[in-house]
Image (cartoon, rainbow, N blue to C red):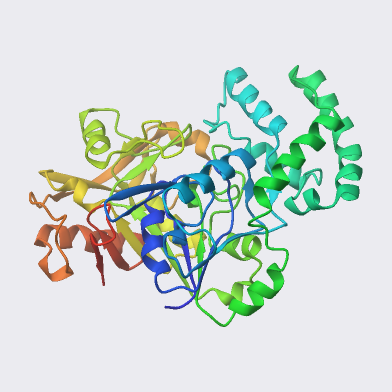
Length: 424
């Protein structure tokens, strides 16, 4: 297998964990390159469900190095809960490595995140309240703590003397929230140091050099349409899930990437606020949600569901750098008489047709989907092992997605388990 990036081709929750887990068997190292515990990746292995938030999806293989890169942000208590939960289930974490350059999510980040969601009257983002956006804000404002700071008392003390006066002033005067003393933060940081110490890889440069001539799998969180630059801004995450983010967040340059697998569902979902032209607020949307078990891994929120949107698929192929598609949840349509694909958007105000994605999401309320209708296959495909054995109408649906997205499908998922996958 060539060095590969796995990204979400929609709004996240496309089933990246299963695809990452599948491809990880041919990789030597799996690197999570961005995002935080606001992401939720669900892997089904031997009938057991594993819900991962920060740990790379390749962790279920005993012989893999799983590296959490510098582009991630880490909420200590969630990291502890996740690693302890995996150990308690017998998962070997000896290959789990954590970059000392990753930024720490601190209590005031989650405090401000919750405040923003609770007080917003307009423009609510739909945050997971995990403090991810606030952590990235501090990262780019150059006032964040990195994991390596926990292991140098002098550095930690000096940085807190710089950060806390500014942070406490804002917490009190702007938000009316709790302030944090230096003593309190140092005691918290001692606890965080204990949580991270078994996993921090201070020798990460030698690690990456050791594996640069081996097979690398880069794992993204969220999806292209949640990218902070190319997504449905401002209803986005605070990092770059696109393939370009893999270089920034992993420590490897772009020439190391040979293939980009864009994971897309056979329909479309999103969690949180923001534009969604093909959303179905009817019985069909409920049916897709029920068939696909569409509830958020991190929050448990019901996902918004709609038909496959080829407008955003084409956009994701372009901006995400996608070279091949992994299509998941195809079996959700097994009992549908007909299936729709959105081929364009129509502006209800003037009749203008958009076949390319309009990035001004505030005008999306005036858009309606233009649909093409295909016949369903009306049979169970969850146990089909080869492309040739798929029903003709399934093949027609897959072919049409390829034509409209401008990208070939190389993986078809027909169920949650590893074995329910067709490789082309």
